[in-house]
Length: 131
Image 1 (cartoon, rainbow, N blue to C red):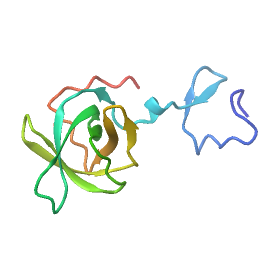
Image 2: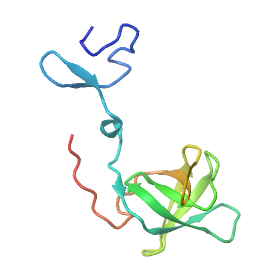
Image 3: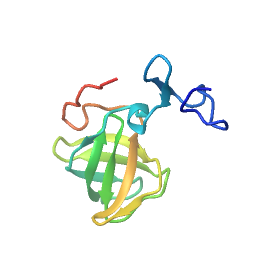
Image 4: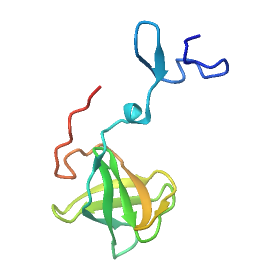
């Protein structure tokens, strides 16, 4: 057992570990476990729902190569299939809602994941990863 491991803690195979020194390891942080780096970026987006003619206006809170946290007037249920449009470039990408929305003073924070990574969708350069 390592110095930071508790007797009933999950094994190293279940929880990724980061080596700190020759004798110590620690669990990975949420940031280290992320598949793609997030960037704070506030920009307008249009959310298209299947079967609806009018898109929902919203804006981003954070973006990544794999999706975004979008602020909408009302939340969308987990699993909802959407197309997200960048009105500046008029590009669209298929996506889905991955978790229930959280309320924020500006509206509902809706986590959206692209069906396939699309790093060029936001028309920005992401900083290099530090891993």
